[in-house]
Image: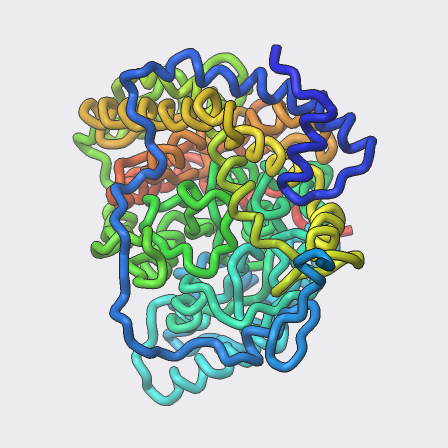
Length: 98
Length: 495
């Protein structure tokens, strides 16, 4: 039985940048334990000799020719911004006061 | 009524001048106005945009321009694809009010083909769900029984087709979100080969699984739409640089004589509704009568597909949805530091299922657990691809019921995530391996009289085979029933 504690969920929520109410933490920790038990089945067949697949296609990097081409105008790029100033995204303070 | 015709019939009427694109578009807008209050398939109806687009098509036709086959035919667009200037929410509060500054490649191709975009359809938030109940706005109702779900995540698209609000729709399929809604609404839905249709402008959920595709009421209509939206796109680094398979020709041929059809042993039996299995077996008999050879194949690792999917998809989603940070677009909530604003915004902006998956994915990717969960799931993915490879040496296509049950009641499974996830048990393997699949109606289940789906799967870039077999089955069943399945659906708006 996998066990995800309330503290584990609180830490995961902090890493994922989602504030959570005490009720949400309680609910998710019990729910995730059940889901993890169900998905842990993958370990039954995942032997050492099986290579992982991250993607259905054999991918290589695709680069385009480095030349100018039409793109969004600053007005278009900023059109969905919650706040803007002088043609820039205006964001809350990122660093501490020091 | 004109809106009950297939897209192909509408295109013919437009071509002969029997109706104009504006008239056809208006007929659909009127239909939406009369029935969507009950069905609730649309999050946004773009009346002015649709009429303007239709006028342009009529002008071009009048000027003698050679138009593409579906020019002037209306379509419903899943709200996970961006359309310039038109609200795009992905069914989430996070993007409420956002009007994207560009078109997805799929949208550009629709516009270039003269297809009229009626509006944006409802969906489970960020395409996570199998019932459309996870929409942050409202649930969509199944036109066969308004108290039931229309499937998900693309329940708005499937319901709009079954309610005759649009003859064509676009869906996206990460684990079954095109095929399962098609199955439970008596419509047709195709998940093309991964990389067959551009993902540029498709808001990402799980990038190695997401695939946009056509939805329609007939196999041939879906094929025409597939040829419009398919093909290489330099804007998507996972786009396959090869010609679109000849799906229209395949749908028109519709011959299965001499084909080997493999029934997947593991995708039937326990957990599948008896009436769904009955219709599945009858469909196999039809194909056999048409000259196909039915063989049984085994895909022993498919039983692990659901578990692998619910690690891989949440892992990729936890990374993809990090973009919703309240800085550049979408809503912004709260005050204080950037981190505090981010935390508060994501708390308010995301719904329950999205949070559940982000937290699960964050866990599966965290150091100490990565190998046991995400790493093991990736290995299962390899085993599932090998199962497909081996099965395709024994059969030209593989088949199964699309979904284990018919449409369930709204609210019935919404508090049991595991029960909800089981809806996708037969559709998920296709996504994990990147191969293609279609769902076509197989009839009405005995227990409840609701539609069931028949799934056909084919190898990568063998999409034409889906249409070949799908069209054959559709023709055989229609002649047996005497009319298409949707003619048996209750009439909407008749109160």
